[in-house]
Image (cartoon, rainbow, N blue to C red; front, side, top):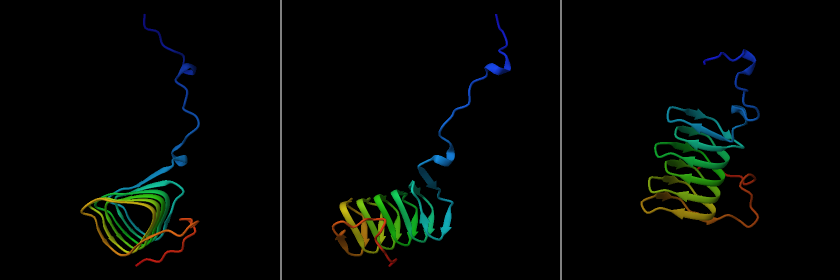
Length: 136
């Protein structure tokens, strides 16, 4: 009734994707980074970053802080940013506190968000990975 399977018949190991090929990175609330962050992956930041952040897509948690420029194709901000922001599609949530100029193609701001800076659409043909931004 119950038979043992030979060792050679164990379940095959998954092939293909490994953790190293992940396209999504998370910086937890206990993470504190000093230095620029450049990622080809999407980022979710809940910690503190002191330096410029460049990525494809950025999601910023409520309790997080970025002190430096932010460059991304898409960004969804709900924490504090002290620096210039450049994004194609930018969403500033009600808990966000922005201290710096904001450059965008598409912009959504929830009621209650605080922005201390200037808003300007990005120049025609401007690429977010090429733009030179300085922290405020």
